[in-house]
View (cartoon, rainbow, N blue to C red):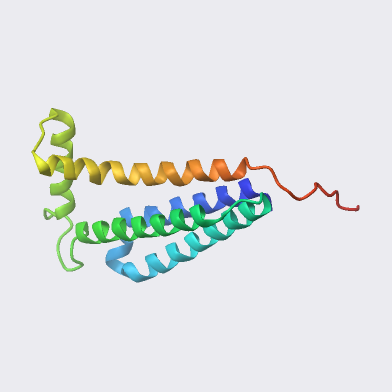
Length: 157
Protein backbone atom coordinates (compact mmCIF):
# COMPACT_ATOMS: atom_id res chain seq x y z
CA UNK A 1 0.00 0.00 0.00
CA UNK A 2 1.54 3.34 -0.96
CA UNK A 3 2.43 5.71 1.85
CA UNK A 4 0.01 8.46 0.81
CA UNK A 5 -2.97 6.09 0.66
CA UNK A 6 -2.19 4.57 4.05
CA UNK A 7 -1.71 7.97 5.72
CA UNK A 8 -4.91 9.30 4.15
CA UNK A 9 -6.78 6.28 5.53
CA UNK A 10 -5.33 6.91 9.01
CA UNK A 11 -6.42 10.57 8.89
CA UNK A 12 -9.92 9.61 7.69
CA UNK A 13 -10.36 7.06 10.49
CA UNK A 14 -9.04 9.60 13.00
CA UNK A 15 -11.57 12.22 11.84
CA UNK A 16 -14.40 9.72 12.14
CA UNK A 17 -13.31 8.68 15.63
CA UNK A 18 -12.89 12.29 16.77
CA UNK A 19 -16.49 12.96 15.69
CA UNK A 20 -17.56 10.60 18.47
CA UNK A 21 -16.36 13.25 20.92
CA UNK A 22 -19.16 15.53 19.80
CA UNK A 23 -21.76 12.75 19.84
CA UNK A 24 -21.48 12.08 23.56
CA UNK A 25 -19.41 8.91 23.17
CA UNK A 26 -17.26 9.82 26.16
CA UNK A 27 -20.32 10.13 28.41
CA UNK A 28 -21.49 6.63 27.44
CA UNK A 29 -18.26 4.72 26.79
CA UNK A 30 -15.74 6.63 28.85
CA UNK A 31 -12.39 8.06 27.91
CA UNK A 32 -10.32 4.84 28.15
CA UNK A 33 -11.66 3.12 24.96
CA UNK A 34 -11.24 6.36 23.03
CA UNK A 35 -7.67 6.82 24.20
CA UNK A 36 -6.79 3.18 23.51
CA UNK A 37 -8.08 3.50 19.95
CA UNK A 38 -6.17 6.76 19.52
CA UNK A 39 -3.03 5.06 20.84
CA UNK A 40 -3.40 2.37 18.17
CA UNK A 41 -3.96 4.97 15.45
CA UNK A 42 -0.95 6.97 16.63
CA UNK A 43 1.19 3.83 16.67
CA UNK A 44 0.14 2.96 13.09
CA UNK A 45 0.88 6.56 12.03
CA UNK A 46 4.32 6.32 13.63
CA UNK A 47 5.12 2.95 12.03
CA UNK A 48 4.12 4.23 8.57
CA UNK A 49 6.28 7.32 8.93
CA UNK A 50 9.23 5.46 10.49
CA UNK A 51 9.25 2.92 7.65
CA UNK A 52 9.06 5.64 5.03
CA UNK A 53 11.88 7.58 6.70
CA UNK A 54 14.01 4.43 7.00
CA UNK A 55 13.35 3.78 3.31
CA UNK A 56 14.61 7.30 2.57
CA UNK A 57 17.65 6.87 4.82
CA UNK A 58 16.49 9.48 7.34
CA UNK A 59 16.35 9.46 11.12
CA UNK A 60 13.02 8.59 12.76
CA UNK A 61 13.38 10.64 15.96
CA UNK A 62 11.25 13.53 14.66
CA UNK A 63 8.43 11.12 13.76
CA UNK A 64 8.65 9.61 17.23
CA UNK A 65 8.53 13.06 18.85
CA UNK A 66 5.56 14.17 16.76
CA UNK A 67 3.70 10.93 17.54
CA UNK A 68 4.20 11.43 21.30
CA UNK A 69 3.19 15.10 21.05
CA UNK A 70 0.10 14.18 19.01
CA UNK A 71 -0.99 11.53 21.53
CA UNK A 72 -0.54 13.96 24.43
CA UNK A 73 -2.61 16.48 22.49
CA UNK A 74 -5.35 13.87 21.97
CA UNK A 75 -5.31 13.14 25.71
CA UNK A 76 -5.72 16.87 26.42
CA UNK A 77 -8.62 17.18 23.97
CA UNK A 78 -10.31 14.08 25.42
CA UNK A 79 -10.03 15.47 28.94
CA UNK A 80 -11.48 18.81 27.84
CA UNK A 81 -14.29 17.03 25.99
CA UNK A 82 -14.92 14.84 29.02
CA UNK A 83 -15.21 17.96 31.19
CA UNK A 84 -17.72 19.54 28.84
CA UNK A 85 -20.03 16.50 28.72
CA UNK A 86 -23.05 16.73 31.00
CA UNK A 87 -23.42 13.94 33.55
CA UNK A 88 -25.61 11.08 32.22
CA UNK A 89 -28.42 11.65 34.74
CA UNK A 90 -28.89 15.36 33.93
CA UNK A 91 -31.12 16.91 31.34
CA UNK A 92 -29.34 17.86 28.10
CA UNK A 93 -30.88 21.35 28.19
CA UNK A 94 -29.05 22.29 31.38
CA UNK A 95 -26.12 24.67 31.09
CA UNK A 96 -22.81 22.83 30.83
CA UNK A 97 -19.20 23.85 31.08
CA UNK A 98 -18.92 23.44 27.30
CA UNK A 99 -21.64 25.99 26.70
CA UNK A 100 -19.98 28.47 29.03
CA UNK A 101 -16.59 28.00 27.39
CA UNK A 102 -18.15 28.36 23.93
CA UNK A 103 -19.89 31.58 24.95
CA UNK A 104 -16.68 33.06 26.38
CA UNK A 105 -14.67 32.04 23.31
CA UNK A 106 -17.31 33.51 21.00
CA UNK A 107 -17.33 36.78 22.94
CA UNK A 108 -13.52 36.88 22.91
CA UNK A 109 -13.29 36.30 19.18
CA UNK A 110 -16.18 38.61 18.30
CA UNK A 111 -15.30 41.61 20.43
CA UNK A 112 -11.52 41.34 20.39
CA UNK A 113 -11.41 42.33 24.04
CA UNK A 114 -8.43 40.92 25.81
CA UNK A 115 -9.83 39.29 28.96
CA UNK A 116 -6.26 39.68 30.25
CA UNK A 117 -4.42 36.43 30.90
CA UNK A 118 -7.63 34.45 30.49
CA UNK A 119 -7.89 35.69 26.90
CA UNK A 120 -4.44 34.32 26.11
CA UNK A 121 -5.43 31.01 27.67
CA UNK A 122 -8.56 30.77 25.51
CA UNK A 123 -6.58 31.78 22.43
CA UNK A 124 -4.10 29.00 23.18
CA UNK A 125 -6.92 26.49 23.68
CA UNK A 126 -8.24 27.40 20.23
CA UNK A 127 -4.85 27.67 18.49
CA UNK A 128 -3.12 24.59 19.92
CA UNK A 129 -5.33 21.97 18.23
CA UNK A 130 -5.03 23.77 14.91
CA UNK A 131 -1.24 24.03 15.24
CA UNK A 132 -0.79 20.34 16.14
CA UNK A 133 -3.07 19.19 13.32
CA UNK A 134 -1.23 21.39 10.84
CA UNK A 135 2.16 20.16 12.07
CA UNK A 136 1.20 16.49 11.77
CA UNK A 137 -0.31 16.97 8.32
CA UNK A 138 2.67 19.01 7.05
CA UNK A 139 5.11 16.42 8.39
CA UNK A 140 3.25 13.67 6.53
CA UNK A 141 3.62 15.64 3.30
CA UNK A 142 7.31 16.21 4.04
CA UNK A 143 7.93 12.51 4.71
CA UNK A 144 5.95 11.42 1.66
CA UNK A 145 8.09 13.60 -0.61
CA UNK A 146 11.42 12.06 0.48
CA UNK A 147 13.17 10.06 -2.20
CA UNK A 148 13.58 6.36 -1.58
CA UNK A 149 17.07 4.88 -1.42
CA UNK A 150 15.72 1.54 -2.62
CA UNK A 151 15.79 0.99 -6.37
CA UNK A 152 12.42 0.98 -8.08
CA UNK A 153 11.90 -2.74 -8.73
CA UNK A 154 9.16 -3.80 -11.12
CA UNK A 155 7.19 -6.85 -10.06
CA UNK A 156 6.96 -9.77 -12.47
CA UNK A 157 3.50 -10.33 -13.98
